[in-house]
Amino acid sequence: MRSGNPTLNENTFLDIGTGAVVGRDGAMTINGTVNRTALLLIVTLVAAMFTWSRFFASGDPASVMPFVWGGAIGGLVVALVTVFKKTAAPFTGPLYAVLQGLFIGGISAMFEARFPGLVIQAVGLTFGVLAAMLVAYRTGLIRATAKFRMGVVAATGGIFVLYLVNMVMHFFGTGIPFIHESGMLGIGFSLFVVTIAALNLVLDFDAIESGVAAGAPKYMEWYGAFSLLVTLVWLYLEILRLLAKTRD
Image 1 (cartoon, rainbow, N blue to C red):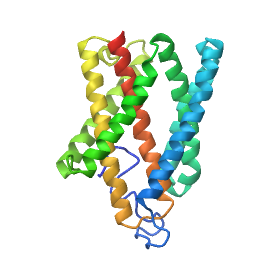
Image 2 (image 1 turned 90 degrees about the vertical axis):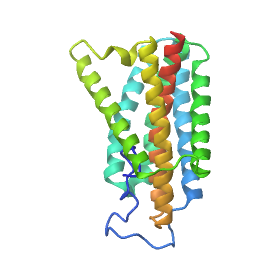
Image 3 (image 1 turned 90 degrees about the horizontal axis):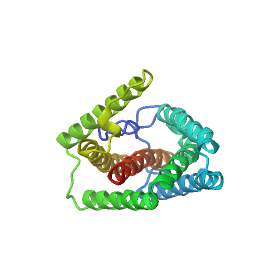
Image 4 (image 1 turned 180 degrees about the horizontal axis):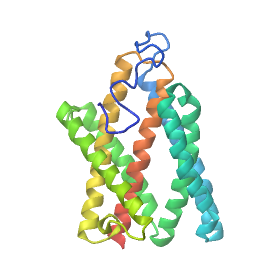
């Protein structure tokens, strides 16, 4: 695999219908992927502003919870559809951005109400990490070698399983304490998860660059942008949780 992000792997950018790589005419480009990523981020921001404003207008979490849950569940469904039907990415990508915007807008507003100034710090750190990882990748400071990929993919899978177990335990009125605690163990865990999320960006860059080199179909620019958004949303939420733990 070229990425710990489940939406990207070494076969992602092959022609879905034939298993063969398409020609250069109408092929995927780096600039096209960057432009579409920027567009999805803008859509996410606009949607987030809706639930953010709604929360602070009412001061009641209940006023945004339907949008938060709808965005979270709907985003998961749309993401799965996009993964299995990549040709739909030009349509499902923006829809995913809207749903995730509603979700993180409501969540961010609730964090901001408790810890003023937290969200702007989390946003700044998220884009700072994105820029740092891109520079590290482009300069060769961090290389997506086979061992590097294996380590990041294994760590990402471990985190996913841990979160899944914690979610199941919540149905029985319990959970894994250090995931949410603000002590040294909890902060250390969040730092580890933020690091793994950041390293996934490097693998995403590598996967997208490989798709461009292979002459993947034009619609895969949308898919690459969608995949980057998945990682960025995860990174932002983990940074938000980490900062909240340090404030708590």
